[in-house]
Image (cartoon, rainbow, N blue to C red; front, side, top):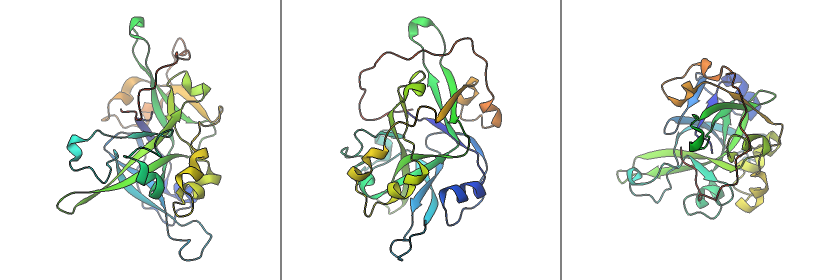
Length: 253
């Protein structure tokens, strides 16, 4: 799953790496949580103008996906993640998979290793970042929800997949990472149907991420400083968990 992440690169760095036309100023964010505004990247209209150059825009959406057919969001679950294995066919995400795929830039994400109740130990948070630094682009989905009075809210979710072996010692799910060479393909909802990009929704390479134990300050959304990522020395590293039964289509924070 992915319930917290960070984005600390400068706008100039993101603009260059993601091929954005323009990007306004924004502060470094060390503890991005559900229901907050998040930055996503969408495809522009370069193909309509006959250009082969990247034409991407950054927009803000609410982290918590609301399908267009929902009547009252207050009575609908908060969908922050969508399972990549089933998103193509699920009513909640089917339209967005076909028409509104986005990239969610991040510097890394947080995950919690939750020991068994019998152990009596507390959950241990980890800051999981690209081993070589820089930005990582998670696969995301976007939907605009319209209320009865005509007001609109742009919403989004992050796609997750089964964790690779290195992350599985902490949690059995991880965000889907889209490689730079696949950005255009993922964002192209005009010529690339969901089945054409299904192969992109795979676990990241084993050596892509490094997991750093951190203090439990990240548990509180009011803590937002860079000290959330200060490494913590722990006695033992987690062991791979036993296989769990599939708990359905979504992960919730």
